[in-house]
Image (cartoon, rainbow, N blue to C red; front, top):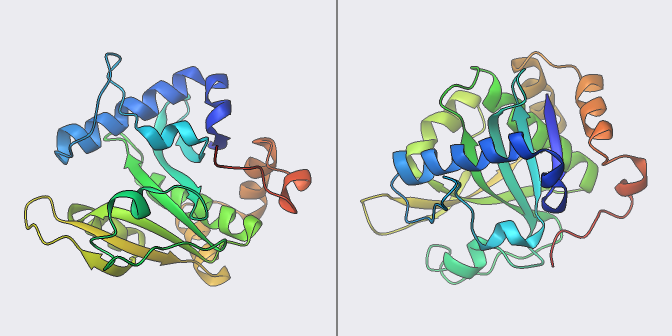
Length: 214
């Protein structure tokens, strides 16, 4: 199952939400060694989770997190512009057709097609909200994952440190790419549409998307 949930709505899915934040702690804190905070519940959360972002979450048959990412429009506060402009040569990435994608997380126990499902769902958001690019901060160790999915970012820049090397990249999706991702994860166009509508992001939100920033 795929969920499209704003931060304000995460409380409606407490088990799914907790498993997402604990998987984030395992990936970013434990495996990648990022300097991120983990709370007493074992969850990795940060200041951008408080800005009511849009989460795309792939869940397994038990309702637990398999893969997820967090989206914020770049017209508001973003991690890239707040903390990583040294990588973008002090160029602020800000446009209504560019959204920031962060915390791309895959559970260790996820099915092989979970990442493809997540990327396809991200393509659905781009289609519905007229987004042309995602910008994101990523660890160099994630590049093999992106290559496996077949969606490698255009790299804007790299951090100078060789240890825990961080990059900023741009992802672009088109109709052909979206259809390929759907095929890779064994989904139909209609099935993704149903997930989107059932998550509450239906016709009434398409012409005027819900505000994503505080």
